[in-house]
Length: 197
Image (cartoon, rainbow, N blue to C red; front, side, top):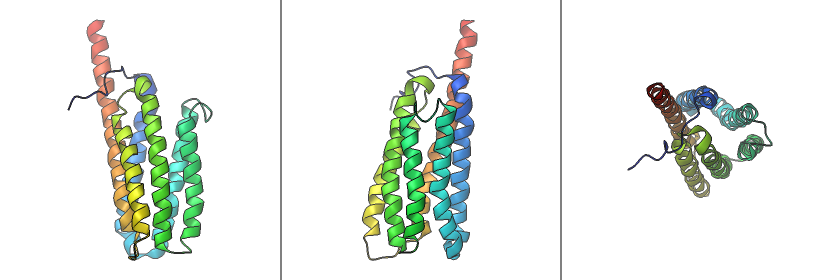
């Protein structure tokens, strides 16, 4: 497969924010997954806290990203993603009092929305930052996973936090991959610039 992510020149200065941002999001998701499969699996209180923290963190991260890149008005997809994640946090709090099937359904709807917003952000950033193919792929996969969650939420079996954890694990992978790709892209840009100089 031909890599098209480097057709547009990346912006090393602009990537100074995205690289640590993507690394931090990957690290958070990785720690969350580890906690879900250990403490969350056997301690319902911890599982409930983790299920609330995950969309809340996403809302805060999108807010920080939008503000760092021109503000909420100029970054509509991130603003909408932030809003969706904030509403999801409240919805999860309510769903926890109903059933885990309801929680999974809420996560499913959120995964669809946040995936589409992330995909839109990746497409918009393609020209200015480069190396956004992983974010676009992640957004598309998130939307598909969300549709699966919604369907699974209507099944008779009761889901648990470990049914959601793989979704977060894929998120960690894609954020880490995006960060690494930006590092490589910046190195290539600097090397090309030094050769031209």
